[in-house]
Amino acid sequence: MSNWQEMEKKYLFTNTVRWPILPVNGKGSYLWDENGKKYLDLVGGWAVCCLGHSHPVITKALTLQSKTLGMCGPQSCNMPQLQLAELLVKISCLNRVFFSNSGAEANEGAVKLARRYGALKLNGAYEVITAYNSFHGRTLAMTAATGQAHYQEAYKPLDVGFKNVTFNDIEAIKKATTKDTCAVMLEPVQGEGGVNIPGEGYLKAVRQWCDEKGILLILDEVQTGIGRTGTMFGYQQFGIEPDIMTLAKCMGGGIPIGAFLAKEHCAVFQPGDHGSTYGGNPLMCATSMAVLEYVIEHDIPGKSQKAGAYFMEGLNKLKSKYSFITEVRGRGLLIAVEFNKDMSGAIKLACIENGMTINDVKSNAVRIMPPLTISNKEIDEALAILDKVFGEVKV
Ligand SMILES: *Cc1c(COP(=O)(O)O)cnc(C)c1O
Image 1 (cartoon, helix red, strand yellow):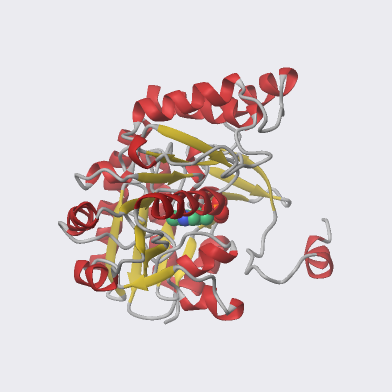
Image 2: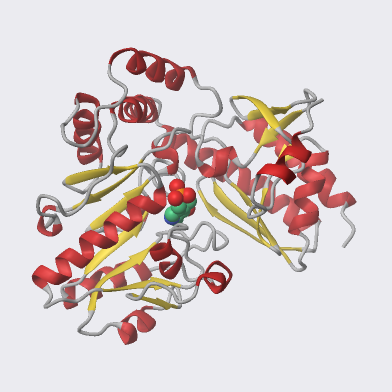
């Protein structure tokens, strides 16, 4: 056995609460630790591994592209980048694409574009309205955008230009809108905030308000995009279209890539306005392309929708069995189970004991965000482990 825990203590910052296990291997919906113990993985690389672990499509694309052109820099186009942009435009309601390396960077770019729009078309408006319980990433600006005090406290003063308001409350957005507002930025379903699904009509009302005021609607689809919530993009379930949308996570299926997309009317960047050294590199773009082609060809969003419904049905049965479960909610394979006590940490550790990973998204809720390729048999296995853990947990 390795001394990984000593190495962790000695060499890494203590910024992350990490699992007490060291994954060394992954295949499909499963992980293995260094002792060979197998875990059904309901976390999926943090809602990233849409095709599961070690998918051959990803291995093949990475290998092939790395043998020709892996990196060329932002001073030139490359064919994988152009093809990936063409595909994203074809399957979405947006017209232009900028590639980044992560979700936070995609959001940074989206907000920069909105500020550019504000400068050029809204008399210098620069403020972006975001929601409480949102999550937009860990950069300094996105820490201000993210409406959760515990991400913000240690980093004050926060970047100016963001106003956090109550999610799912159109009046709160209306009240916060001033002549300085250039955009509203929301997740269609809040992920890190606890899988919060907006009420009927909320996003439509936000869209209408943005149109009325001439401001932009940015949807952060870093977690909801590419099939996670049962459609290719989350916005498709709410009868609206964003002006700007950001992606990452499932877009790469496990490799670092993100993007923001915009409609033509707000694609106002001028030469030199934004850039990234690694963004749009051929190695990641070719791999993301292979992932997306697989996702489309095998109707992974449809599979996610069906698997999510099957999972929720089983979780609701557990809810009627265990009175401490107060709610099961989700869309596709983005699901939360909420409890009447702060017991999610204990549930997470008990699941690991029993060979399964799960995310304690809030102190009183666990989140399920497995590979979108998870089978009904694997879901049955997950439900059986949860049944055992719920039956044994001391509350
Ligand atoms: C994960 C996430 C981010 C941040 O993505 P990183 O790749 O970690 O920078 C931003 N927005 C949402 C909605 C996310 O779920």
